[in-house]
Figure 1 (cartoon, one colour):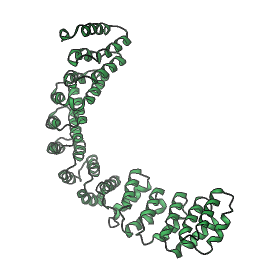
Figure 2 (spheres, rainbow, N blue to C red):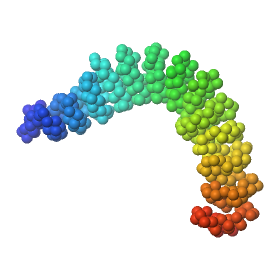
Figure 3 (cartoon, rainbow, N blue to C red):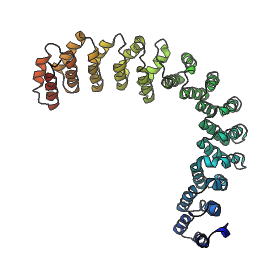
Figure 4 (spheres, rainbow, N blue to C red):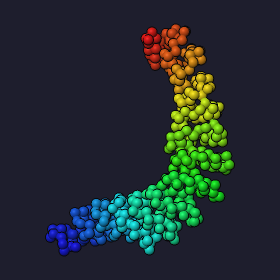
Length: 421
């Protein structure tokens, strides 16, 4: 190849090769960068050697140059380094091949049958990140037949990342026949996400191994298909206590993914489990329940949440205030929340007073105007604008002389708009 270079490039090439023999790592590092103008086929052997250099900076400069070279030329030469005994070499080589992406797929597929198990494993990992369906048949074969568990697991995980339904048959076989691989197989099946896979998983929901049942529940929740709801809801009453909250969370995930209402008081064990999860402050469950509130659960269902309001987090209560107007006891519940220890909850309750019957709202607002301060007083003054009860104007006139600027300004604003239609 060297003979095909122009005289200037040939001279430079010889100079670089000589500098790479230096004991000075900085000299070797800068020499590597001089290879960028050359064709990959002319310098690939040099770069392969440099990426195995003892010095980290030299290895990194080699990886930078390799990333700019033709993947079609470099991948085949780099792939054997995935089996290096030095972990730093394996990792930096994998990083380059990951950046090659789709261009590396053609040469990485044959590496799935390499004699070195690390080459096979890393190749499977990188193919999964590339997400190219061309690798699916060989990854299925690797997952089913490789005698090294870590290689099989990497192939299964890669199939899940690629997400092609043609892998499902192999994954079903792995789950049913390869003991110890069930959790990884189920996760991959869940990532692929066909309705057919929902049926496969729900049929195996009552597995004797808890860790496998846990994985199935998790996969069904992440998959988010509404046709898994029945099996999960029916499983809660008989499930071990340590699984109940996980099942409830999966049901709520499906509710969000399918945008369907799953909160139903008739599912008493489910509702009780959800409330228990909320009590523990699980942020993901809180977000999922808040989404459910936007879908307007019926009055009886919301009643269960209001009955447990003392133990619920503030953000859940605020969500109830905003989205539970269908609850028969809504007015009384909101009035009671004005006294809540959290100002945010109390303020949100007062903001909802325009939705309450005037005869219930008026005495509470007047009491706050007379006896409260701070954010509750400000919220009450804003609510008074909509109700305008007798006796409030005089209290506002007094508040308009308050020593606190915020109170005084707000009271005067409400007074100024009192007669405005």
